[in-house]
Amino acid sequence: MAQRAADGDRQAQRELFHQLKKPVHHTLYRILGANRDIEDLIQDAFLEIFRALPSFRGDSSLNRWAQTIATRQAFLSIEKRKPAAVDLDVVEDEIVDKDPDAHRVALARQAAKRLYAALDRIDAKQRIAFALAVIDGLSLAEVAEMTDSSLVAVKTRVWRARRDLMRRAAKDPVLASYLAEFGGGDA
Amino acid sequence: MTDQKLGPPPVEGLSDVAWARVERNVFTRMEGTVTNAVAAREVRGERKNPWFWLAVPGAAAAAFALAFFSIKGPAQQPAGHGSDEPSRVVSGASPTSVSFGDAHVTLDANSAVLMDQKDAKPTALLENGAATFAVAPRGDRGAFTVMAGDASIRTSNGELHVAREGERVEVSVETGSVEIRFHGREIPVGAHHTWSSDRPSDVK
Image (cartoon, rainbow over all chains, first blue to last red):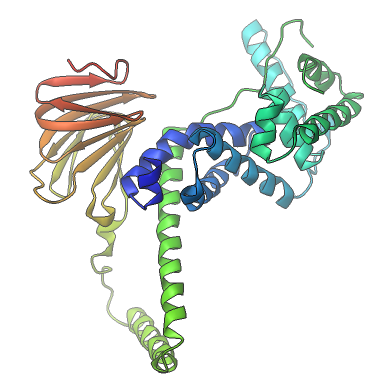
């Protein structure tokens, strides 16, 4: 199917789109968090996937190869956009629901929002390494493959990202508590 | 905060409508890329030809005249191009029928289909709900394709009912035959048989 899609078979391209749409979306979302530009970014990623498809040699799975391209698109997006203008201490939601499950979901949302707000302020490569290795739970080797980096570089980025995040979390108990959940990472 | 672990931030999925929009835009932009690339190649080729320098102002003048008369002339519908544009049909509380080329599509209540006729290859993307597709014999023309979830259903003659709920897809063939492509498999399904993505190898 990949070969037919690379040859311009529109039906094969559509099938490939449906096969790859979830992994591509997952990677972008994991790195960037909730994002109003996510649809545009998925489009950009797929245009790049179809453009680069003739060079796909099958060294990795098609899904992983597509995720590598999505990671690159995420990197470009981070590099392009302006630094977040909102301070961590003004993104807090008020949690009023007394239902334990609803309360937990609201807490998770708030924690995720604060985590990504903090990630917005660290180096793009560190952010990507942290998001993929620590939040998404990929191995360092997988992250190295997806970011075309050495294992040592990825490990260093994760360590630095965690250090920066912990520094920012010093005044933010919600973020600090959430980061502690990811304490067993690779850093 | 809480003793209970919150887990990694959830990945919030896109709606079917959003995915249909993304798919449409990707392929529209790809058409544009191909067209631009071909145009660029043609221009590069033309540069060696001395007539190129006459053709460019001529084409510009023609384009200007066309634009001028389009604005000044009597109001008209754009000629024929609209039929290639994708169109979405959404049913409300009751079923809706629509003709799509030589196919007849009946949407069940609360369903949505995006229909595309690009390159004379009719494709219907079932975004949600269910629909019946009655496809007249297509002869040498390309098959009629219904996309639903991860399934691609092709037929050149027949009537089929396709239902989609999230990523679950069920196809019932009333007449004729279809070929379903699903996760790398190709499954032929004949008249009076049903296929479901729950058990992709089985045809009942």
